[in-house]
Length: 399
Picture 1: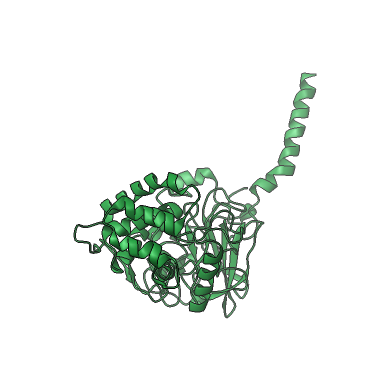
Picture 2: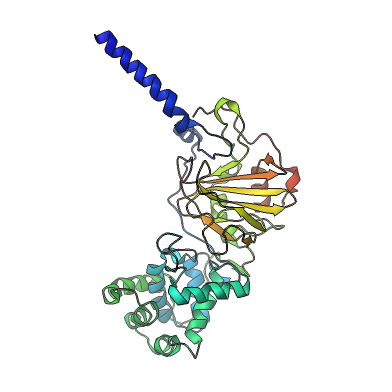
């Protein structure tokens, strides 16, 4: 009887391997599966990075300056004449509405209709107006500079309530708590607003300490960038019509992520692509001008987008959490190089947060690694020169 039990165990175990292991480990074409954990440890390259300080803005023609989103917002508002105290009061509110002053933040699920959006979490009719204004200017609604311009236009509009209820009293105060309160109750107006005042004032004090000055003038930030936002540090400065697909800081800090080999599929089949290990919810940008022709929501690539760049060239972006659902970056939309198209995630066949990216030219897969290097070094190779082999490690990864 013990032998029979062992036989049954072996039989059931083999049945499990036959039925379930292919599902768990099959890489499939363009699956973007990460390498096994042992290889991650050997390479010293994790598939996530907890340091996710955003540096981004998009273009509307306005000059914005700052080494991060907080400095961009601070310098914009003080540049409009607000004192550091008044600006910090505004920033304490924006920070809780959109942590990190992220212009692409969507309240709730991406498909939730008119939920809050952007640095001020515009909702309902104000969000409709935001999207209409972005369309009229032909810029992405997630454009940082555009959102700051829109916010300021709301404050200055003589036909809108915000001029009298927000901007005029805000300019008159020199008290940080009062400045925070004015914006909290009269501009943002969240539920249970009174309970949020202490916390937002604390945030405001932090920004005043970090960015403020006793002169009332904007401080020149260290290592600042100044851009017309036709591609910026956030998406990789646009070079010869191309942008890095994620924040340039990741390339600066971890070049190996952009030059390392890609994995092989089961049986040794090449997976001609690149996996870039970025933190969950990192901004993902279009590398080129083009049209979103598909927005997969399942399968190996998970939630992603496919962009037709013309002349037979297509770019595939996979494993995002909202591919195809961001305003201005849905199926059928035309996008620009450096435009936000989705946020990174761990959807599809994936073992950790990362961006899977591949390029096809007339249906043939090409290695993207050389293109990444060329964009950063401002020496972009001809797209047709990208190799069709050699971007895999040569190690067979069984899945």
